[in-house]
Image 1 (cartoon, helix red, strand yellow):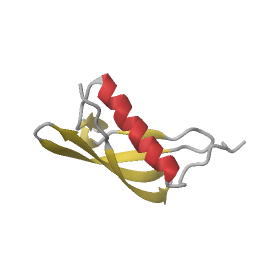
Image 2 (cartoon, one colour):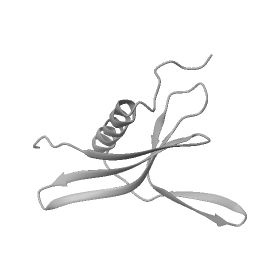
Image 3 (spheres, helix red, strand yellow):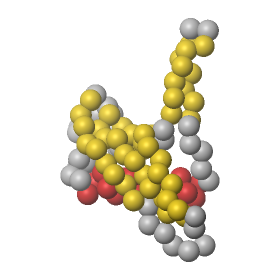
Image 4 (cartoon, helix red, strand yellow):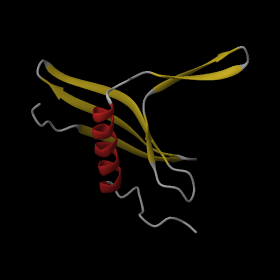
Length: 99
């Protein structure tokens, strides 16, 4: 498989644990695929993590979250790494965790 570069468009924000939104563009042989709606989430005192696009709805009084995009384990790791690299590059993340 040829090496490709995942492009990330990051929009920083501070809304509770939500730290940023990200759109990811993945090149392919037939054109680019852009996936919108990734989120960078960070709880106080914890490392940030990437949430994939999802939708939620209520069924029988219970909130159900459904993942919109499913990818292979290898591609998932590449997407997470690309989003986290852009998040850290943006200065939105501190390596120091609050005590």
